Amino acid sequence: MGLLDYFRKRSPERSRAEAGEAVEYEGFSIVAAPQPNGSQFNVAGVISRSVDGVVKEHRFVRADSYASRDDAVTFSVAKARVIIDQFGDRMFDE
Image (cartoon, rainbow, N blue to C red; front, side, top):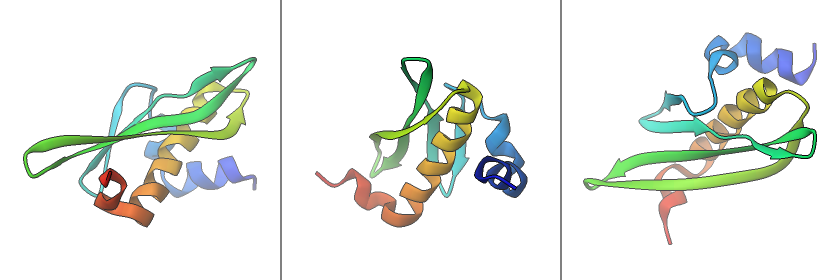
């Protein structure tokens, strides 16, 4: 089983996410936004959450690239979940 198969089997909603479609996770909103890089797509997205009545955003871009936009969307959501698990609201600290 490849890494992509692992993520798809572990959480089917990850493979169904569309670029620009919000996915909720642990009270955060994730929007996958893969960036074209030649014939590939880089993992990228936006994580947002309302903190004290203010919507905060964290944008991320990773060097990981995939030939398929759908694969890049899947891994963008997966990477956002890892960022949320590691940093939580601290990602919004300036």
